[in-house]
Length: 167
Length: 167
Image (tube, rainbow over all chains, first blue to last red; front, side):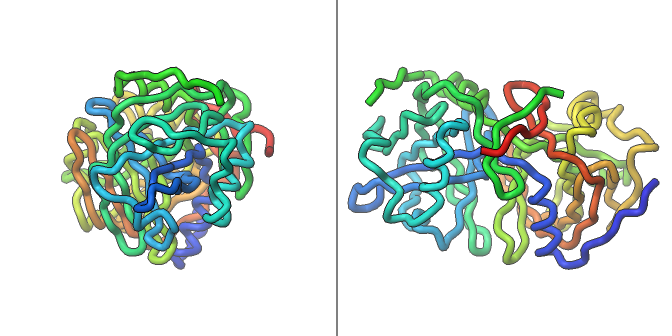
Protein backbone atom coordinates (compact mmCIF):
# COMPACT_ATOMS: atom_id res chain seq x y z
CA UNK A 1 0.00 0.00 0.00
CA UNK A 2 1.54 3.28 -1.05
CA UNK A 3 2.12 6.12 1.37
CA UNK A 4 0.12 9.21 0.57
CA UNK A 5 1.77 12.58 0.90
CA UNK A 6 -0.26 14.76 3.31
CA UNK A 7 -1.23 18.40 2.66
CA UNK A 8 -1.98 19.88 6.07
CA UNK A 9 -3.15 23.28 4.73
CA UNK A 10 -6.88 22.72 4.01
CA UNK A 11 -7.10 25.61 1.51
CA UNK A 12 -4.21 24.21 -0.54
CA UNK A 13 -5.67 20.70 -0.18
CA UNK A 14 -9.03 21.91 -1.57
CA UNK A 15 -7.33 23.65 -4.51
CA UNK A 16 -5.17 20.63 -5.32
CA UNK A 17 -8.18 18.32 -5.19
CA UNK A 18 -10.40 20.44 -7.45
CA UNK A 19 -7.61 20.69 -10.02
CA UNK A 20 -8.09 16.92 -10.41
CA UNK A 21 -11.88 17.13 -10.62
CA UNK A 22 -13.82 17.83 -13.83
CA UNK A 23 -17.21 19.57 -13.91
CA UNK A 24 -20.04 20.11 -16.32
CA UNK A 25 -20.75 23.75 -17.10
CA UNK A 26 -24.13 25.47 -16.65
CA UNK A 27 -25.53 28.97 -16.81
CA UNK A 28 -28.11 30.18 -14.29
CA UNK A 29 -30.26 33.17 -15.29
CA UNK A 30 -33.06 35.21 -13.73
CA UNK A 31 -34.43 38.75 -13.60
CA UNK A 32 -33.19 41.30 -11.11
CA UNK A 33 -35.46 43.74 -9.21
CA UNK A 34 -35.62 46.05 -12.26
CA UNK A 35 -36.48 43.06 -14.51
CA UNK A 36 -33.09 43.18 -16.22
CA UNK A 37 -31.52 39.80 -17.12
CA UNK A 38 -28.76 38.61 -14.79
CA UNK A 39 -26.92 35.35 -14.43
CA UNK A 40 -23.65 33.51 -14.13
CA UNK A 41 -21.68 30.46 -15.20
CA UNK A 42 -21.75 27.64 -12.62
CA UNK A 43 -19.78 24.42 -12.30
CA UNK A 44 -21.71 23.31 -9.19
CA UNK A 45 -25.12 22.59 -10.69
CA UNK A 46 -26.35 19.08 -9.89
CA UNK A 47 -29.50 17.01 -9.53
CA UNK A 48 -31.05 16.52 -6.10
CA UNK A 49 -33.43 13.71 -6.94
CA UNK A 50 -36.06 13.18 -9.61
CA UNK A 51 -39.10 12.60 -7.40
CA UNK A 52 -39.84 15.44 -6.88
CA UNK A 53 -37.48 16.91 -9.52
CA UNK A 54 -34.97 19.10 -7.70
CA UNK A 55 -31.62 20.64 -8.58
CA UNK A 56 -29.05 22.63 -6.64
CA UNK A 57 -26.25 25.06 -7.40
CA UNK A 58 -23.80 27.01 -5.29
CA UNK A 59 -23.29 30.77 -5.45
CA UNK A 60 -20.92 33.18 -3.78
CA UNK A 61 -22.66 35.82 -1.64
CA UNK A 62 -20.22 38.31 -3.21
CA UNK A 63 -21.49 37.65 -6.74
CA UNK A 64 -23.49 40.18 -8.76
CA UNK A 65 -26.42 37.75 -8.86
CA UNK A 66 -26.70 36.80 -5.19
CA UNK A 67 -28.91 39.66 -3.99
CA UNK A 68 -31.51 38.88 -6.68
CA UNK A 69 -31.95 35.25 -5.62
CA UNK A 70 -35.10 34.90 -3.51
CA UNK A 71 -37.30 31.99 -2.52
CA UNK A 72 -40.23 31.77 -4.96
CA UNK A 73 -38.41 33.41 -7.89
CA UNK A 74 -37.94 31.55 -11.17
CA UNK A 75 -34.57 30.78 -12.73
CA UNK A 76 -33.45 29.11 -15.94
CA UNK A 77 -30.72 26.47 -15.65
CA UNK A 78 -28.90 25.93 -18.95
CA UNK A 79 -26.64 22.94 -19.59
CA UNK A 80 -23.94 24.10 -21.97
CA UNK A 81 -22.44 22.44 -25.03
CA UNK A 82 -18.93 22.58 -26.38
CA UNK A 83 -19.86 25.13 -29.06
CA UNK A 84 -20.94 27.66 -26.42
CA UNK A 85 -17.61 28.14 -24.68
CA UNK A 86 -17.69 31.88 -25.47
CA UNK A 87 -21.05 32.17 -23.73
CA UNK A 88 -19.62 30.33 -20.69
CA UNK A 89 -16.68 32.75 -20.63
CA UNK A 90 -18.85 35.83 -21.07
CA UNK A 91 -21.24 34.77 -18.26
CA UNK A 92 -18.22 34.41 -15.95
CA UNK A 93 -16.65 37.80 -16.86
CA UNK A 94 -17.75 41.46 -16.42
CA UNK A 95 -21.34 41.22 -15.19
CA UNK A 96 -22.42 44.34 -17.12
CA UNK A 97 -21.48 42.71 -20.46
CA UNK A 98 -23.08 39.29 -20.08
CA UNK A 99 -26.32 39.65 -22.06
CA UNK A 100 -26.02 40.34 -25.80
CA UNK A 101 -29.49 40.80 -27.38
CA UNK A 102 -28.95 38.21 -30.13
CA UNK A 103 -28.09 35.51 -27.57
CA UNK A 104 -31.21 35.30 -25.43
CA UNK A 105 -34.95 35.80 -25.30
CA UNK A 106 -37.63 35.87 -22.64
CA UNK A 107 -38.75 32.39 -21.64
CA UNK A 108 -41.43 30.99 -19.32
CA UNK A 109 -42.11 33.20 -16.25
CA UNK A 110 -40.04 35.91 -17.94
CA UNK A 111 -36.70 34.22 -17.26
CA UNK A 112 -33.87 34.90 -19.75
CA UNK A 113 -33.26 31.85 -21.96
CA UNK A 114 -30.23 31.11 -24.15
CA UNK A 115 -31.39 28.81 -26.98
CA UNK A 116 -27.78 27.82 -27.75
CA UNK A 117 -27.73 25.77 -24.51
CA UNK A 118 -28.12 22.00 -24.86
CA UNK A 119 -31.13 22.03 -22.51
CA UNK A 120 -32.94 24.51 -20.30
CA UNK A 121 -34.73 23.78 -17.03
CA UNK A 122 -37.21 26.31 -15.69
CA UNK A 123 -37.15 26.11 -11.91
CA UNK A 124 -38.50 27.90 -8.84
CA UNK A 125 -36.23 28.67 -5.91
CA UNK A 126 -37.29 26.58 -2.90
CA UNK A 127 -34.50 27.34 -0.45
CA UNK A 128 -31.34 29.41 -0.16
CA UNK A 129 -29.07 27.80 2.39
CA UNK A 130 -26.38 30.23 3.50
CA UNK A 131 -22.93 28.91 4.50
CA UNK A 132 -20.14 31.37 5.30
CA UNK A 133 -19.68 33.54 2.18
CA UNK A 134 -21.57 31.14 -0.06
CA UNK A 135 -25.01 29.65 -0.47
CA UNK A 136 -26.54 26.43 -1.74
CA UNK A 137 -29.63 27.27 -3.80
CA UNK A 138 -32.23 24.51 -4.09
CA UNK A 139 -34.82 24.69 -6.85
CA UNK A 140 -37.94 22.81 -7.91
CA UNK A 141 -37.86 22.02 -11.62
CA UNK A 142 -41.20 23.04 -13.13
CA UNK A 143 -40.66 22.42 -16.85
CA UNK A 144 -37.97 22.21 -19.50
CA UNK A 145 -37.06 23.37 -22.97
CA UNK A 146 -35.10 21.35 -25.50
CA UNK A 147 -31.97 23.19 -26.56
CA UNK A 148 -29.35 22.81 -29.28
CA UNK A 149 -27.82 19.41 -29.95
CA UNK A 150 -24.14 19.42 -28.99
CA UNK A 151 -21.52 17.61 -26.93
CA UNK A 152 -21.28 18.63 -23.26
CA UNK A 153 -18.95 21.41 -22.14
CA UNK A 154 -16.53 20.53 -19.33
CA UNK A 155 -14.31 22.62 -17.08
CA UNK A 156 -11.13 20.82 -16.01
CA UNK A 157 -7.63 21.95 -15.07
CA UNK A 158 -8.65 25.59 -15.61
CA UNK A 159 -9.64 24.91 -19.23
CA UNK A 160 -12.85 24.30 -21.12
CA UNK A 161 -12.91 20.85 -22.74
CA UNK A 162 -15.02 18.34 -24.60
CA UNK A 163 -15.74 14.85 -23.28
CA UNK A 164 -13.32 12.24 -24.65
CA UNK A 165 -13.42 8.50 -25.05
CA UNK A 166 -15.73 6.13 -23.23
CA UNK A 167 -13.97 3.79 -20.83
CA UNK B 1 -34.34 33.18 -32.81
CA UNK B 2 -35.22 29.50 -32.82
CA UNK B 3 -38.30 28.15 -31.12
CA UNK B 4 -37.54 25.79 -28.27
CA UNK B 5 -39.63 22.69 -27.86
CA UNK B 6 -41.18 22.64 -24.37
CA UNK B 7 -41.23 19.62 -22.04
CA UNK B 8 -44.05 20.25 -19.58
CA UNK B 9 -43.36 17.14 -17.45
CA UNK B 10 -40.74 18.34 -14.93
CA UNK B 11 -39.44 14.81 -14.20
CA UNK B 12 -38.84 14.14 -17.90
CA UNK B 13 -37.35 17.63 -18.28
CA UNK B 14 -34.87 16.95 -15.46
CA UNK B 15 -33.87 13.61 -16.96
CA UNK B 16 -33.44 15.07 -20.45
CA UNK B 17 -31.34 17.90 -19.09
CA UNK B 18 -29.00 15.72 -17.02
CA UNK B 19 -28.42 13.46 -20.02
CA UNK B 20 -26.75 16.52 -21.59
CA UNK B 21 -24.71 17.36 -18.49
CA UNK B 22 -21.33 15.80 -17.65
CA UNK B 23 -20.05 15.32 -14.09
CA UNK B 24 -16.80 14.54 -12.36
CA UNK B 25 -16.88 11.37 -10.27
CA UNK B 26 -16.02 11.15 -6.56
CA UNK B 27 -16.21 8.60 -3.79
CA UNK B 28 -17.29 9.57 -0.28
CA UNK B 29 -16.25 7.24 2.57
CA UNK B 30 -16.68 7.14 6.34
CA UNK B 31 -17.11 4.67 9.20
CA UNK B 32 -20.50 3.39 10.27
CA UNK B 33 -21.60 2.97 13.91
CA UNK B 34 -19.72 -0.36 14.14
CA UNK B 35 -16.59 1.28 12.64
CA UNK B 36 -16.97 -0.63 9.39
CA UNK B 37 -16.06 1.25 6.18
CA UNK B 38 -19.00 2.56 4.15
CA UNK B 39 -19.29 4.89 1.21
CA UNK B 40 -20.65 5.59 -2.23
CA UNK B 41 -19.91 7.02 -5.65
CA UNK B 42 -21.13 10.60 -6.09
CA UNK B 43 -21.46 12.84 -9.13
CA UNK B 44 -22.66 15.82 -7.07
CA UNK B 45 -19.50 16.71 -5.16
CA UNK B 46 -18.49 20.34 -5.58
CA UNK B 47 -16.58 23.14 -3.91
CA UNK B 48 -18.44 25.64 -1.74
CA UNK B 49 -15.71 28.27 -1.44
CA UNK B 50 -12.06 28.19 -0.47
CA UNK B 51 -12.14 30.61 2.46
CA UNK B 52 -13.01 28.73 4.60
CA UNK B 53 -12.49 25.56 2.52
CA UNK B 54 -15.89 23.90 2.13
CA UNK B 55 -17.33 21.22 -0.12
CA UNK B 56 -20.79 19.76 -0.60
CA UNK B 57 -22.32 16.58 -1.94
CA UNK B 58 -25.85 15.26 -2.28
CA UNK B 59 -27.06 11.93 -0.93
CA UNK B 60 -30.34 10.04 -1.11
CA UNK B 61 -31.96 9.40 2.26
CA UNK B 62 -32.65 5.90 0.98
CA UNK B 63 -28.96 5.10 0.51
CA UNK B 64 -27.05 2.62 2.67
CA UNK B 65 -24.76 5.44 3.83
CA UNK B 66 -27.30 8.08 4.82
CA UNK B 67 -27.99 6.94 8.39
CA UNK B 68 -24.26 7.05 9.21
CA UNK B 69 -23.83 10.69 8.17
CA UNK B 70 -23.83 12.91 11.27
CA UNK B 71 -22.66 16.44 11.97
CA UNK B 72 -19.14 16.29 13.44
CA UNK B 73 -18.16 13.01 11.76
CA UNK B 74 -15.21 12.81 9.39
CA UNK B 75 -15.44 11.71 5.77
CA UNK B 76 -12.92 11.23 2.98
CA UNK B 77 -13.77 12.74 -0.41
CA UNK B 78 -11.87 11.06 -3.24
CA UNK B 79 -11.63 12.57 -6.74
CA UNK B 80 -11.40 9.65 -9.16
CA UNK B 81 -9.21 9.11 -12.20
CA UNK B 82 -9.96 7.31 -15.44
CA UNK B 83 -8.05 4.19 -14.34
CA UNK B 84 -10.38 3.69 -11.35
CA UNK B 85 -13.62 3.16 -13.24
CA UNK B 86 -14.04 -0.29 -11.63
CA UNK B 87 -13.82 1.30 -8.19
CA UNK B 88 -16.47 3.86 -9.21
CA UNK B 89 -18.73 1.04 -10.41
CA UNK B 90 -18.16 -1.09 -7.31
CA UNK B 91 -18.90 1.84 -4.95
CA UNK B 92 -22.21 2.36 -6.79
CA UNK B 93 -23.26 -1.33 -6.73
CA UNK B 94 -24.13 -3.82 -3.92
CA UNK B 95 -23.22 -1.99 -0.72
CA UNK B 96 -22.02 -5.16 1.01
CA UNK B 97 -19.32 -5.70 -1.66
CA UNK B 98 -17.81 -2.22 -1.88
CA UNK B 99 -14.67 -2.54 0.25
CA UNK B 100 -11.98 -5.00 -0.91
CA UNK B 101 -9.08 -5.13 1.58
CA UNK B 102 -6.36 -4.47 -1.03
CA UNK B 103 -8.07 -1.25 -2.17
CA UNK B 104 -8.16 0.87 0.96
CA UNK B 105 -6.52 1.61 4.29
CA UNK B 106 -7.33 3.64 7.37
CA UNK B 107 -6.55 7.33 6.93
CA UNK B 108 -6.66 10.37 9.22
CA UNK B 109 -9.44 10.22 11.86
CA UNK B 110 -9.92 6.56 10.93
CA UNK B 111 -11.68 7.31 7.63
CA UNK B 112 -11.31 4.72 4.83
CA UNK B 113 -8.93 5.98 2.14
CA UNK B 114 -8.49 4.66 -1.42
CA UNK B 115 -4.94 5.53 -2.53
CA UNK B 116 -5.87 4.92 -6.19
CA UNK B 117 -7.92 8.16 -6.14
CA UNK B 118 -6.33 11.22 -7.75
CA UNK B 119 -6.72 13.21 -4.52
CA UNK B 120 -8.30 12.76 -1.11
CA UNK B 121 -9.83 15.46 1.08
CA UNK B 122 -10.38 14.75 4.76
CA UNK B 123 -13.42 16.72 5.88
CA UNK B 124 -15.73 17.13 8.86
CA UNK B 125 -19.50 17.23 8.37
CA UNK B 126 -20.79 20.72 9.25
CA UNK B 127 -24.40 20.46 8.16
CA UNK B 128 -26.87 17.95 6.70
CA UNK B 129 -29.61 19.86 4.94
CA UNK B 130 -32.58 17.59 4.30
CA UNK B 131 -34.77 18.17 1.19
CA UNK B 132 -37.55 15.71 0.41
CA UNK B 133 -35.90 12.26 0.04
CA UNK B 134 -32.42 13.71 -0.34
CA UNK B 135 -29.91 15.77 1.59
CA UNK B 136 -27.15 18.26 0.84
CA UNK B 137 -24.16 17.47 3.06
CA UNK B 138 -21.79 20.38 3.74
CA UNK B 139 -18.29 19.64 5.00
CA UNK B 140 -15.29 21.61 6.26
CA UNK B 141 -12.10 20.43 4.57
CA UNK B 142 -9.47 19.85 7.26
CA UNK B 143 -6.56 18.41 5.28
CA UNK B 144 -5.72 16.53 2.12
CA UNK B 145 -3.70 13.62 0.78
CA UNK B 146 -2.05 13.48 -2.62
CA UNK B 147 -3.34 10.54 -4.62
CA UNK B 148 -2.37 8.78 -7.83
CA UNK B 149 -1.60 10.82 -10.95
CA UNK B 150 -4.26 10.19 -13.60
CA UNK B 151 -6.74 11.91 -15.91
CA UNK B 152 -10.12 12.77 -14.39
CA UNK B 153 -13.03 10.34 -14.55
CA UNK B 154 -16.29 11.69 -15.99
CA UNK B 155 -19.85 10.42 -16.03
CA UNK B 156 -21.81 11.49 -19.11
CA UNK B 157 -24.68 9.98 -21.09
CA UNK B 158 -24.78 7.01 -18.67
CA UNK B 159 -21.14 6.12 -19.42
CA UNK B 160 -17.81 6.65 -17.75
CA UNK B 161 -15.46 8.73 -19.91
CA UNK B 162 -12.15 10.53 -20.04
CA UNK B 163 -11.83 14.26 -20.69
CA UNK B 164 -11.19 15.03 -24.36
CA UNK B 165 -9.71 17.97 -26.22
CA UNK B 166 -9.32 21.47 -24.88
CA UNK B 167 -11.46 24.05 -26.64
